[in-house]
Image (tube, rainbow, N blue to C red):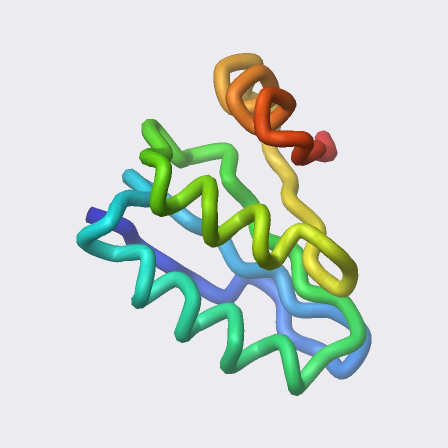
Length: 92
């Protein structure tokens, strides 16, 4: 299960918070939400601080979206290590 919420919304940036798990069962929901906001802002920030697990489908999606304007944020050492194995950077 994943819960998505918009924390900040402006023409300059949108901060989208994600809570739960990014898995095959909900990766389409996350992709749809990111696509929705991508065209409405200069920078899209996805906060992953409350993500508990990411499966291969979730990692694949994040890899596809990893270039600007998407920025991944969070403070989890687990997610930092997991994303690093995929060549992704988690900003604090």
